[in-house]
Length: 426
Image (cartoon, rainbow, N blue to C red):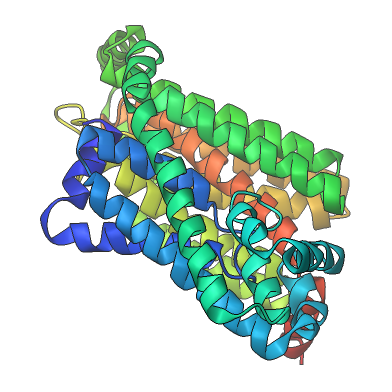
């Protein structure tokens, strides 16, 4: 099943309300000064246009909810500006990436050309969330603001939704040629790399080691997409999957079976719950709050994404597995969770152990466990080789994304994070 078909089924029937509500919420939040910088409304609008083109959404309803959402979000911004004025930006702007100078420039434009600024401000990433607030702060009459804001909201919704709608045919041609998963991975990777560059230009948050983490992230994303595309198109690696599955038969015996069953349990559900809980208690006892949060987000999020991809792909497992298996095969859940959990331990050992011999011994041991778990899934006929590679890639991609995101959050919201840490450390 392709991603677009999966989305089509998801948005059909009883789930359609939630799809349109998500579009409404995106448009509304993008227009508010608190969340505007973080919400990719234009990207979502283009994506919704593509979905409308292929029939997953209705074009009129999509345009309507985006327009109404944009106007409603602007009204919230206008109200906040009228009630709290510039003091709101001065007091809370630093927490939401809003700069005083950008607000003052927007306010100056409002005072000179209110109508043009209200309409045009929506199309600028810097002024989008500030324009309604500045209009309220500058005491622009409500009816005047509402008139131009409705024009701007409708224009914005039509422009970006129709851009995706018109691109829909080309999207189909591109995905037919390159592969849908590779195209989506390229778009997602480009967005991650662009966000990394823009954030670092403004904040200088990331250092050399984070660049290496970004490169691992992008390589893992490509590898995951490549494995998914290989299965969809039944490429050469699928033949290798079947060959390897058969070739291992001559090595299978009761002793190795027991050994690899024990090995595979090192990333089993019960084991990971126990190990994860112990690791969480350890990090909390050491007051390593970032690692605690990393562990929770990476393991829970990784599991959710793995199950979602399995249901999108729907690949069957090998026959006659030597262990009990449930659900689809691609990607391997054991491989995903193994690389997430044991890589977090590696990341901790690398940064916090001073004894070099002990550090590299533990890092080598964790690396061996990751690889052993992956091989055990193939040996036990629980997964194909490409399932395990995809699982490793998914886990590496998600974990590195979580690491970079936490670095961004803890730096941008340093004061808030510091207060929370002080409270927890009592």
